[in-house]
Every structure is written in C-alpha cells, then in structure tokens.
Image 1 (tube, helix red, strand yellow):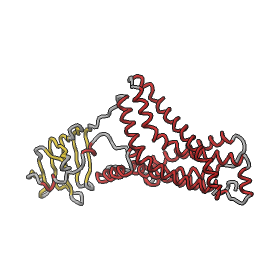
Image 2 (cartoon, rainbow, N blue to C red):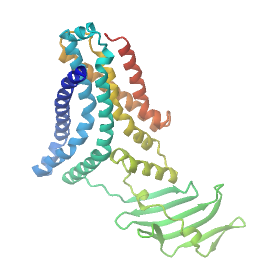
Image 3 (cartoon, rainbow, N blue to C red):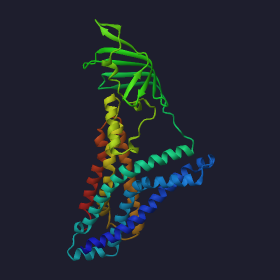
Image 4 (cartoon, helix red, strand yellow):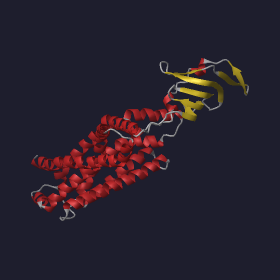
Length: 358
C-alpha cells in the first residue's frame, strides 16, 4: 500500500501540472491562428475569451495522452537516476508490481477520457465553433442543389433540383420506387415538397404518379402506398454534413445508420465513430510505453523524457492518420482504421516492457 501511495503522489500532481501546460499551449495555438481574423472583424475581447474557455475541454482531451506519457516517463526516469529503483528491486519489489497502480490509473483515465468527450467535449466544441464562426462571419448555408438520396435499402430514390433549408422544402422532386429485386415500380413527381415535422413525412404539392404497367409507364392516381413511405428526414438533404467527431457516440451511431439506410458511403464516419472508443485507450498505451522507455539513461532526464513523449505521440498520431485514410478509402475496415494503431503500439509497448530494467 505504501508503494501505491508513493507512486501516485509523484504522478498525479505532476500529471495535473503537465496537463494544464499542454492544454494551455494548444489553446494559445488556436488563438494565435485566428487572432488576425479576430482583429480584422473587431471581435469583442469577451467573446474571444469565451471561445478560449469553450475550447478548454477539447484541449484537455488532446493534451491528456502526451501529458500522461511525459509524467510517467519522467517520474520513473527520475527514480532510476536517483537509484531509488535499484533500492526498490533490492528489497524484493518487482517493476511490474511497483507500476501496477499506474496501469490502474491509466484505465480509469481512459474511461474518464471517453465520458469527458461524450458528455462535455462535443457540446462545448460545437458551441465554440458556432461562436467562432459568428465572430469571423463564416456562416455556411445548408441549402443544397442537385441532390440524390437513396433510402429504404435502395427501394426509394429521391432526386431533387434544389433544397431550401429555411423552409425545409425540396423543389422539382422526382421519387423512384423499386421492388425488392430493384426493378422499377413507380415514379412520383412534384414541383415542391414540404417537410411535415408533426407527421414526419413529406407533403407533396400536386404530385403526379406514374406506374409501370405491362412494361409501360402510365399515369395513375396518386396512392398512399407510395406517399406514406416518404419519411426520409429533411436533414439528409442538407448541404452541411454531420461531423461525427463533433457529436456524442449515440448521435453518431444514429447518423451512420441513417447513411446506411440511405445507401450513402459511411466508411469514414464509421471509422471516426470507432475512434471515439479507441482514442481514449491511448492513455493505457502511454503507461506501457512509459515503463518500457524509462531507465535507459541517467542524464538529462527531463529533456529526454519530454523528447521521447513527443516523438511517441507524434508517431502514434501519424500512424492513426494513415490508417484512418485507408479506412476511408476502403483498403481496411473502419474498425481496423481506428483500432490498428492501438494494437500495434500495445505490441511495441510489450516488447519494450520485456526488455526494460527490472
């Protein structure tokens, strides 16, 4: 129990300080990248400060891996440099037993990272981006042109000339209905369709219906058999696409299911969804890496620990970017795009841990 308290008393305060400084640096980088635009748009100082405050949870989320890796690496390297680890080993305490509290702390922080992102970060980041766009006059229109949406497992196809988001209206709309074998059943056309929020359906203005009868399209009476199936939400017709990284896991899952039902590509969105679960696990990987990297030198402990931490985190992020691109293009599965970097770095960490000084 004394060893547990000893290691945690060294790690937790240092981790909090490291997390604060790394988070502050990330926040200042975002400020300096936009400060000229703020000045140009005469943005009020109180609103700029509010943007920075709203960005704090996201910077903490970004900063946690490098701060934890640096903390553990430096703490253990310092103990090696002061010969405290040798005294520990001589007393019969193994390295694995001594660092077990670090691994437990890493698991707790990993779960904390996930819930922080899912419950707080996505909300504050959306507020930050909205306020920032307002200050910089970067509002984006959700109106869309020449839209094609596939719905109901490709049994319904919407083709509209234009979508007006302010009115939730589709203009010059053709709707194709198909059988289970994808053969043509009917076509509906209307000059205008309005979304009925209360009923969750599209109201068509003077629609015209054509059905395939004896291999010939013939004009027929508009049937509820078809109009009652027009339940695809107006949101899918918007030009603005939902950023899966900026919504919580539950909403991301619903959006991906929506894309799947509409027959639209969703590999990139699904890989980002899996990344929500894979990224927090980097803290557990950082604990393994830190233990494996320490004890290699007794000089310049602070500088070497910081260098090793930065290099390791950069390599992880670069590798993750590559796998996410491969997942987006379909070379690997979305699941592997998110989790493969974790698997590889866990393997590297185990190798380093195997050859660490015990």
